[in-house]
Length: 267
Length: 150
Image (cartoon, rainbow over all chains, first blue to last red):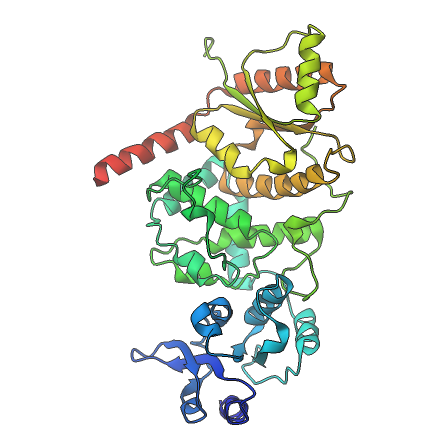
């Protein structure tokens, strides 16, 4: 990835940015996030098929903000996350340099937010194909089978909240799950408490999930919790014709409305 | 289950359905006594977690009701609520939680008779469906899980 390294060096030497958020090879051969602050260290940057983590999650972390203006290696889901964060006023567009990566893995020239928006709009914004099949299969089950499936999956949950920590959209400094007056979510990591937690998480991400699948990848016990938010992303599109993270000006689906929103169950 | 009396919780808005339910009473219209009415400032205030709390605490059915669209005391609370219920229902259907047990309705302050009808049809439906065993089992099983873990 010589282009990427060259661009990162250029940005750091000219002091256009103070940190480049990208990937480096970890000791076990896996890719891990890297926070490059000097041009010499930019040599460590890599980009290949191992680099799947959504790096946008770091943009809102105060430790990373402290480093200064950031450049970030961004594939499509990361770009959509950035767009979402800008629309929710969590990051300032001018403070971010996007080192866009195309689906083929080559460096894109993303000069500003409009170029990024153009790239996002041209891309396929539905759920990634590897999840579509499983979603369709689950949708075919009977209600009893669905309930049993989710009970089985969620009984594994240890309430570590890795799904929340890995999610770029879960940036609240005080999460509902930590609120204890009232105690919305049972504290215990039992099936019922876990189910409440995952319902709450999915609902709070309705219309905001950009379908990166990071929550599912982060889960240490392999709960496919990304399917819940992805299912709602599908539904948001079918009801409201909105894909999350496509514009910096969009208002959140759940905090706005159209008088003629269609439903069939309210009597 | 002939002796089964459904427990139904009604989350209603202060301005329309609660006043409507008042009118049902002052009009001396009889309706099922299985319903426990909880008054909210607006349908927009009714958090989806409250519905799950109701089921966890033993409700067999739920009614959520507020002002008709365009009649909201706060202009748009019920529109926001509508979007939220659309998403909530889709998520519940995806997870297999029984949404036949939840009635969403718009009942205005002038519709006392309609409130009685909404409650009666819901209670009849829940009576046919029986107690919400699978959710109660989930909660009880979870308590046992805790005991075993300790």
